[in-house]
Image 1 (spheres, rainbow, N blue to C red):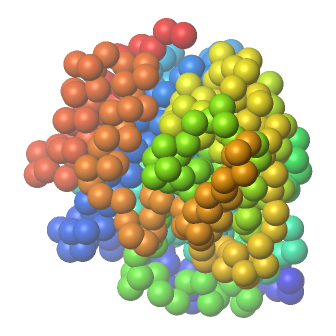
Image 2 (cartoon, rainbow, N blue to C red; image 1 turned 180 degrees about the vertical axis):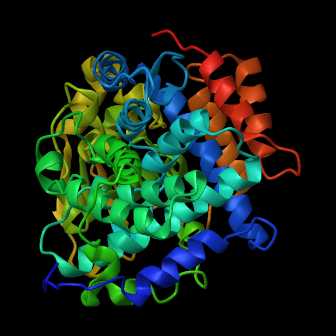
Length: 460
């Protein structure tokens, strides 16, 4: 943080946040917040399933089973769509790494990152060890995680110079969920927040974007660090106060907790690509549909966007992470195929000559007006020129999927069906959708969902 502090005891912001967390009640939660949380869980489950195809997910699952195994007297959890067991942090690591490596999950624009990709894996792991967990309480836990994580993110971005990965702050959301579910003391909760913030991966996001790998957005370690922090704090391990919660220069990020619901201000990605490329994709898809553009006739594609977007890769990818952190590649997919889905970020697509050609014809330019609107808005303009001299301009387009307007329930459900359906049978998709969409029901049992995703083994 910008100014170091020595604290004799909890700051009022901790006491207020702690009381808020303990007092959350599904019965008094605004209905729209519960509904949003349910739809976000559905979306995340679909992305987690589809991500099973990625090498990163396979490596993380195998690694967790071998190296993050639970001891004989320690709680264990199964890995979703796999069924094998690991420790609670190990299972969270495997699922969060898998989910994080398919860049199609929710996010809050001011955070420049994502909470759900850590929260759902942590919740699935925690639920395995819980004696019981109702569907409504599970949604309350997700909401708590979102609200805590995103305020920590806001505080971090406001007080440090580097742009850190989401794992740096979504770990604190995982702590909040675990602390409430496990019923730890106030003191343990405070120490766990401090431990998680201290050990969470404050990794530099732009280094990963410039050199895309399976590290992705740091969430693979955000989730397990959050669970580990609670477990070790329960054993008596202490941690320095969480600066993003208790230091003076973070205080402004917490004043509206319980009044403004950040859970409902998120976007839901329609494409498994870095959010910075979504406005260009939308613009390209719009031009293709409106003018019936034959991709074989394209001479050049110019993308005008904000700085971070323009800095995404312009090369033909040779790995899935490189495809997901690209600008030229997904724009080429939009023009050539009219779709940017899971198949377009898988290795089989990288040899497509049409995609290779169009990627080479795509150039990015920084637009100062669009840069000035970032991060509140993600916008772009695409101009495509044909060999016969005609050109078509999209005008300024804002990325679809929210937050304004929010995606509809039908849009989120359709996305879930596309992603989950890429690896599961129709009957499995229907069964999974039914359980998740019923989580806010009076008798819903979240552990039934964990049992189902552990029974549905995906083989790739």
